[in-house]
Length: 308
Image (cartoon, rainbow, N blue to C red; front, side, top):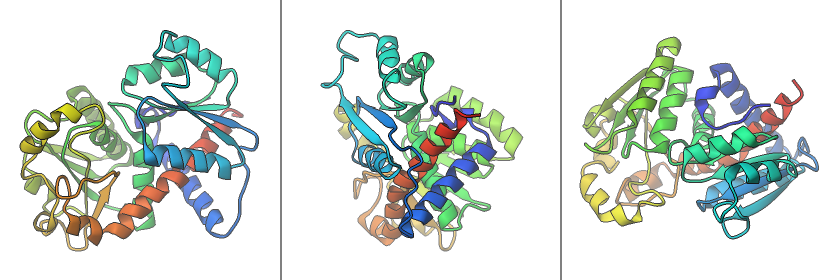
């Protein structure tokens, strides 16, 4: 049995298997072919952090695979209201076939997985967002921009940045990260990513100059400056991130034909300009849709591991 908590625990071969499976499932769906590979299985979805894309993609995906998804918020279960994580894990995993958790603390999901009898998927923690990176890489493959990619990430050194580092280190492309001073990536995660990068031939650089990161990049990406739970820091962050908005002038520094990616929700005229987002709307919203297909590929892949 395998859990999907970070890309750290997966080889390049396994990541590509999941992405390829998601692409095939998407192709089948376009052709009107529904394979109920998770027929009569149940996915428990625990949301301590709300989300449009995570809920819709997992719930729809489980339905299309012939299964059922249960939405469980803080108000619906005893987790966080006195019951220990390990008890909730043992109860839910005794009734459901798979669990997806979207929460704050990464240690919480690690503890849950340690006591779970079924696969646990990280739908987002404060440290990592690996399901989003599956969708991002699937989009890179679909648009044929994955070979010799130079990815520039401009913004906060957050869970998205950490997941980009892990994807880069495993797959073997170039990643340039630009963050304001005081908002750099976690040094331990960076060191670990660098270790994997040596094995794959990946190149990871960090800077405080967004123009340096974007110059010549084939893909430019960013994230919101104030994530959920950081609302009180919003004004402070807006001031700290001046000069980090991905606008037309910044995109002009990138390679000719460079693509823009965003995990959404996007706050126009903050981390990205209206013109850049709308100018790359096709790929950005294909990227959003690919959450559905990448996660279906992931759930089917995890289910198959139980029979190995």
